[in-house]
Length: 216
Image (spheres, rainbow, N blue to C red):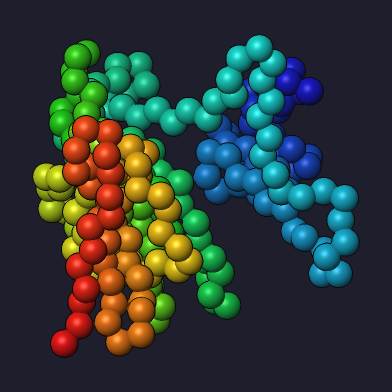
């Protein structure tokens, strides 16, 4: 099977027997990109085949790798800061066309100009709100591990920064306050006087919930 696929790519043929333009290939569809794949699910929903990509590796990890460079294939050059290394995006059909850009996406972006010793990178997550057609950045994980939610292009200086309100809606009973839960914030909805607790260490190996009653 591997040699068959290699042969088809070398001949630049469409896998279902239709000749494709030189250098591109398709499965289930005449390709317009370097590689296109399409599967039409039966109207009645009955099929023995689903469009699933599976990578099985024995005695090693399976990998899905995206690589990016500037320059040419014969002479690649380093990526600058702010370059997208790779992108996984999801595009739905709106009744007229498939979306021209991602409705939701995960993108790896360089944080600095790449050199042999500098590969700073962040991951950004984008989603599209209801009633709109663009997907702004909703969350990013910087190379230093700091996480920003709705921070846009702003630099995130703390381990977690949220641009907007944060709601703590605890239910049930607070866990035991011990070394494992030290620093935990617990919020309880109690009638008309809500309670906020923080698990703190009060002495050596001694832990206790400290409570603040919130009300009028």
